[in-house]
Length: 143
Image 1: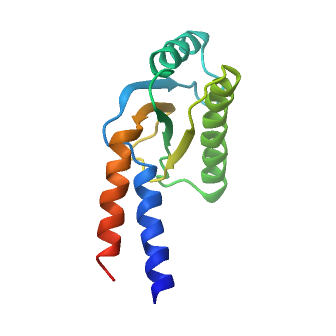
Image 2: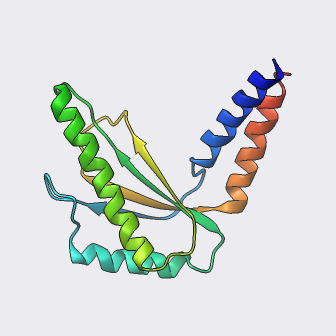
């Protein structure tokens, strides 16, 4: 029974960690249809984002909404591959720019519309530690 409760509490903590309660400095990187490359103007925007957040303690949250719609399985598989490829392009750019902060990625599988935009959010640690503590307390109350 305790093992089950520990597992449930870990799920709550993991969920809280991937959420950014109050994102600071959001950046959206749009992509062309069927492309995993972003325009150079967005590289400049990423550089500004890196400079603005490099002295703060926190982490980067990269997310992409994936719209399933009424597509066949092969098209859904392609969309998933392309979404992951777009996220990886942004992560690779950030890594090559020597971003020291942790990078968390999230693929939102319940998108309400077709999107080709990868969103970056700066999540400040102290805010999110409070969210983790709140969720951990709630999970422990089941004991």
